[in-house]
Image 1 (tube, rainbow, N blue to C red):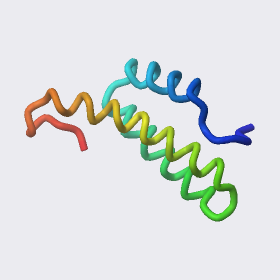
Image 2: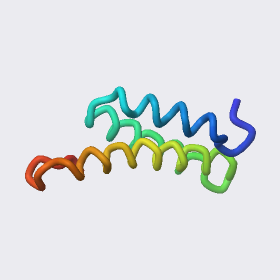
Image 3: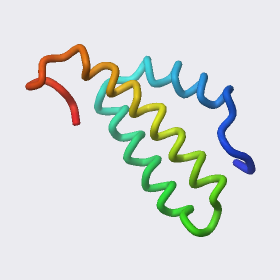
Image 4: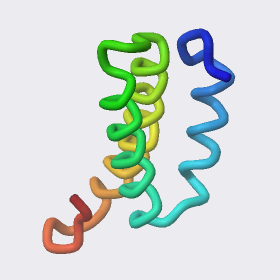
Length: 76
């Protein structure tokens, strides 16, 4: 059960996991985290922030990968 905001251990775990995934999985996780954050909005701010932090971490990995690709091959 998530009772606090994301910790540095969470971020480390997410970053390591994100590096093992393909672009489609990364996009799915980011979308799922945003949906979870929306569900927590106005009800549990700590969980909302947790899911937004998680989405951001996985999204940053997708952004890093896209920088190395030509524009026509980038994932959105």
